Image (cartoon, rainbow, N blue to C red; front, side, top):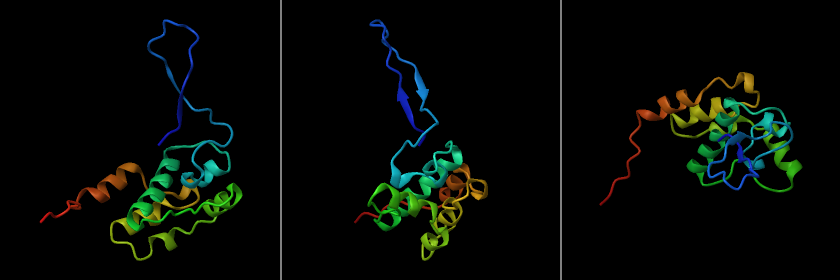
Length: 131
Protein backbone atom coordinates (compact mmCIF):
# COMPACT_ATOMS: atom_id res chain seq x y z
CA UNK A 1 0.00 0.00 0.00
CA UNK A 2 3.05 2.26 -0.02
CA UNK A 3 2.78 5.44 -2.00
CA UNK A 4 5.12 5.79 -4.94
CA UNK A 5 5.58 7.95 -7.99
CA UNK A 6 7.56 7.66 -11.15
CA UNK A 7 10.32 10.16 -11.50
CA UNK A 8 10.06 11.94 -14.83
CA UNK A 9 13.36 11.75 -16.62
CA UNK A 10 14.47 14.44 -19.06
CA UNK A 11 16.50 12.06 -21.18
CA UNK A 12 14.65 11.00 -24.36
CA UNK A 13 16.53 7.69 -24.37
CA UNK A 14 15.38 6.64 -20.94
CA UNK A 15 13.15 3.66 -21.71
CA UNK A 16 13.36 2.51 -18.11
CA UNK A 17 12.68 5.03 -15.40
CA UNK A 18 13.68 4.69 -11.79
CA UNK A 19 11.01 4.43 -9.14
CA UNK A 20 11.40 6.52 -6.03
CA UNK A 21 9.34 6.36 -2.86
CA UNK A 22 6.96 9.24 -2.37
CA UNK A 23 8.12 12.27 -0.45
CA UNK A 24 7.42 11.56 3.22
CA UNK A 25 6.67 15.19 4.10
CA UNK A 26 3.15 16.54 3.86
CA UNK A 27 -0.19 14.82 3.51
CA UNK A 28 -0.28 12.23 0.76
CA UNK A 29 -2.75 9.45 0.06
CA UNK A 30 -6.47 8.71 -0.09
CA UNK A 31 -7.87 10.30 3.07
CA UNK A 32 -10.49 7.60 3.82
CA UNK A 33 -7.75 4.93 3.92
CA UNK A 34 -5.01 6.81 5.76
CA UNK A 35 -3.63 5.76 9.08
CA UNK A 36 -3.81 8.27 11.94
CA UNK A 37 -0.07 8.95 11.66
CA UNK A 38 -0.42 9.73 7.96
CA UNK A 39 -3.36 12.02 8.73
CA UNK A 40 -1.03 13.92 11.09
CA UNK A 41 1.58 14.22 8.27
CA UNK A 42 3.92 11.84 10.08
CA UNK A 43 5.98 9.31 8.11
CA UNK A 44 4.18 6.17 6.97
CA UNK A 45 5.47 2.73 7.95
CA UNK A 46 4.47 -0.88 7.57
CA UNK A 47 2.16 -0.32 10.54
CA UNK A 48 0.40 2.39 8.49
CA UNK A 49 -0.30 -0.24 5.85
CA UNK A 50 -1.71 -2.57 8.53
CA UNK A 51 -4.17 0.14 9.58
CA UNK A 52 -5.20 0.78 5.97
CA UNK A 53 -5.71 -2.94 5.40
CA UNK A 54 -7.95 -3.01 8.48
CA UNK A 55 -10.12 -0.30 6.93
CA UNK A 56 -10.31 -2.24 3.66
CA UNK A 57 -11.11 -5.50 5.47
CA UNK A 58 -13.97 -3.78 7.29
CA UNK A 59 -15.28 -2.47 3.97
CA UNK A 60 -15.05 -5.94 2.38
CA UNK A 61 -16.91 -7.56 5.26
CA UNK A 62 -19.70 -5.00 5.60
CA UNK A 63 -19.99 -3.34 2.20
CA UNK A 64 -19.72 0.00 4.04
CA UNK A 65 -16.82 2.41 4.26
CA UNK A 66 -15.22 2.57 7.69
CA UNK A 67 -14.49 6.26 7.22
CA UNK A 68 -17.33 8.14 5.61
CA UNK A 69 -16.66 11.09 3.33
CA UNK A 70 -17.51 14.66 4.04
CA UNK A 71 -14.92 17.35 4.19
CA UNK A 72 -11.26 16.56 4.71
CA UNK A 73 -11.18 17.75 8.33
CA UNK A 74 -14.13 15.51 9.18
CA UNK A 75 -12.42 12.50 7.59
CA UNK A 76 -9.15 13.17 9.44
CA UNK A 77 -11.03 13.56 12.74
CA UNK A 78 -12.82 10.22 12.18
CA UNK A 79 -9.48 8.51 11.58
CA UNK A 80 -7.87 10.02 14.67
CA UNK A 81 -10.75 9.05 16.97
CA UNK A 82 -11.56 5.64 15.49
CA UNK A 83 -12.61 2.98 18.02
CA UNK A 84 -11.20 -0.39 16.92
CA UNK A 85 -13.51 -2.32 19.25
CA UNK A 86 -16.57 -0.74 17.64
CA UNK A 87 -15.45 -1.91 14.19
CA UNK A 88 -14.57 -5.42 15.43
CA UNK A 89 -17.83 -5.95 17.29
CA UNK A 90 -19.98 -8.67 15.75
CA UNK A 91 -17.41 -9.63 13.10
CA UNK A 92 -16.69 -13.31 12.43
CA UNK A 93 -13.37 -14.63 13.63
CA UNK A 94 -10.55 -14.22 12.83
CA UNK A 95 -11.68 -10.93 11.24
CA UNK A 96 -12.81 -9.43 14.54
CA UNK A 97 -9.38 -10.06 16.05
CA UNK A 98 -7.64 -8.59 13.02
CA UNK A 99 -9.78 -5.43 13.10
CA UNK A 100 -9.36 -5.08 16.86
CA UNK A 101 -5.56 -5.19 16.50
CA UNK A 102 -5.10 -3.44 13.13
CA UNK A 103 -7.30 -0.40 13.79
CA UNK A 104 -5.48 0.77 16.90
CA UNK A 105 -4.86 4.49 16.40
CA UNK A 106 -1.39 4.52 17.97
CA UNK A 107 1.13 2.91 15.58
CA UNK A 108 3.33 1.86 18.51
CA UNK A 109 0.42 -0.11 20.00
CA UNK A 110 -0.67 -1.62 16.67
CA UNK A 111 0.75 -5.03 17.53
CA UNK A 112 -0.11 -6.99 14.42
CA UNK A 113 1.85 -7.37 11.21
CA UNK A 114 0.85 -8.23 7.65
CA UNK A 115 2.39 -11.66 8.28
CA UNK A 116 0.21 -12.12 11.37
CA UNK A 117 -2.87 -11.16 9.35
CA UNK A 118 -1.95 -13.62 6.60
CA UNK A 119 -1.51 -16.40 9.17
CA UNK A 120 -4.85 -15.64 10.80
CA UNK A 121 -6.63 -15.76 7.45
CA UNK A 122 -4.68 -18.69 5.99
CA UNK A 123 -6.48 -21.54 7.74
CA UNK A 124 -9.93 -20.37 6.62
CA UNK A 125 -11.65 -21.82 3.58
CA UNK A 126 -13.06 -18.84 1.73
CA UNK A 127 -14.15 -20.79 -1.34
CA UNK A 128 -17.58 -20.00 -2.66
CA UNK A 129 -19.86 -22.99 -3.08
CA UNK A 130 -21.34 -23.33 -6.55
CA UNK A 131 -24.54 -25.14 -7.42
